[in-house]
Length: 94
Ligand SMILES: [Zn+2]
Image (tube, rainbow, N blue to C red; front, top):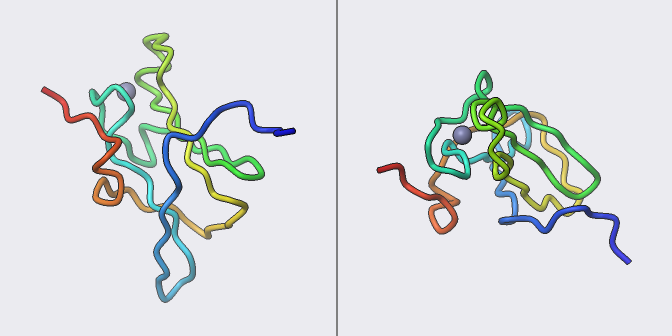
């Protein structure tokens, strides 16, 4: 039995800094059209997943507006935007 509504696209990557654990979030939205930042995305955390919604895609009523990253219950103190750990799932804009 699973309580997760969605299958994650990837496992969330973490970095340990002097301040604590940071979760790494892709800078590209799922459609590859927008740059994600603290201002252009909304991050929601559930028990075992992090959901990162592209606000521009949400406003356009796109269905694939949200990254779901498996956290396995890890907690981060802050988020950092970086594509590098996610190059295998990122679609590059044309
Ligand atoms: Zn987008």
